[in-house]
Length: 478
RNA sequence: GGCCCUAUCGUCUAGAGGACUAGGACGUUGGGUUCUCAACCCAAAAACCGGGGUUCGAAUCCCCGUAGGGCCA
Image (tube, rainbow, N blue to C red):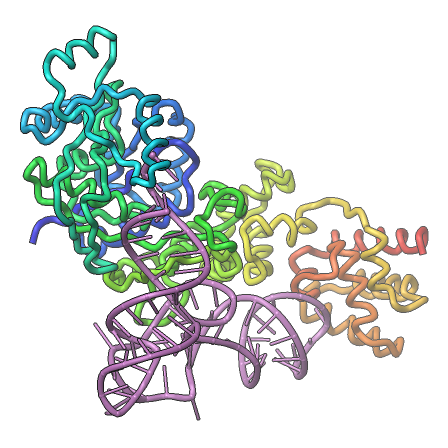
């Protein structure tokens, strides 16, 4: 069996899109599963729309996702000689020809064809030009494009996912392979690249099915054996059209910024169009590689469902070690200016992480759920406070609690709980009457981890100070 | 407009003619647990696009519709 060689070939005309990441992932999984080679090729022939910034974003995104390539990146703009060589060869073989028609002329004839209800395919006007005619066009300063002579008959190819797909060659006009400016068209460059790079399996989106017969014509014309093809289902937005910006966030770097783990995105994307026999939902990347089977990929397109991605992200966050999670969340705290560069107490931070780990859906939520661990002073909000002060004498009770805790030698969750319970019994109130206001006093939130554990981490000094401030706030505002 | 692809709960899917009373997961709803939230546990609602065939038997095979999507121009 020949070597497995696959590729991902993005155009640097936009940020790395989750659809591209999806295709890249399936190629990568296929390569890794089969101990093959994963190649990166940058299709930058659209010079107008390509940019270095987009290219960097794509490389960064693939790296972040861990979809490391074994070869490349190759650049089409550095291979122009190659396309020229093979297009010349096709001319020499009589399987391609120069075409001097201008876009305006073509447009004109296309309109007429449509009016006469004929298929608007190229009419082969330039197929049999005499050398005089060619010379005349050249004198006019026209630069020719090169068109492939499409053969008669039918073209069938086997798709690993979809089975045999058949096309009638008559439906396809002689298409341009080299534009008049010497730049190859997409279909031509792809074939030359895939063949010369020894690609064994072309795994790409379903939107390329209708390009496949054109590409097969080129393989055949050059007497090359085509690779195997597999067309993956597309990613759709909630309205069932191809996933695009108007559906919300589509760029991989945005997901990174929002606090998704690369392993979670990989996990989710892998399950969009493929299900391992296991029937689990959460997989490590090693498991995915181990289980991946291209033949089991589904045919129908999938809607990108961010809710499920979020759930998978939660699962992956939970399976992280404390230390790892601390590393990953730190940048978000720095960005929110909750941590000053060098004043971080790592031991303290790890304790905070322990309390918050199973509550995080996104890494970025660390700043929303844990800000009070790092703030010096809290600015209480009237609406929040109102929710938790149910008892008219709460201010007095809190002062009593504070006094109890001042004397507490062991400021541990267990002791704190014991003393709070004793006090509420003595006052004949429910523990909640004290617990909820204390939570707000310490965190400025009504939600959060177990109060006693939280206090243990926060420490005696901050706890007492915040209760004191809170009492003052109550006295001033209620 | 032409060609091509696709069709199971809201979503991702399992399903290879009898094991289907159509299974799982996310989400949703209800309940339990609890100091709040999350988590956790239990439960519920929820689908084979329609019509014809083939067959003793069809979610599964075939045909025709329909719908969605893609590509080309």
